Length: 160
Image (cartoon, rainbow, N blue to C red; front, side, top):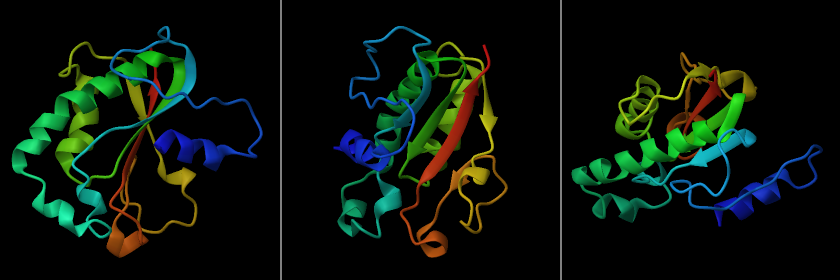
């Protein structure tokens, strides 16, 4: 479903691109195959409570622990999938630090397996006109400030 949304959003935009739907934990591609990868990880969905208030009754604290290994693995594989100089966008609809900055920090430090050399890119300039994006370089959107779900975005450039 989400791949279809991305494909529709890209429709009519110039430039070569391809939307691929696959199991990111078992890549069907060679490392370094892509220039750009968007990894929209499964999460608790806590950032979408304004649209799905019933979700608060389906989530438990241990759910965070269940998603963490998958989120780290998907981010690590996404970084392996881009060439040196390529960019990965790590996105989640959760504001919880355990699903956002902690995942990125753990992968960059090698806590989630082998570290993939990468650096954060400031995502804020890619959102002109969006107020109150914080100190960066990551972006955390909030319902009360941005009129969106509480979405998180981190951009990483592979350096080696």
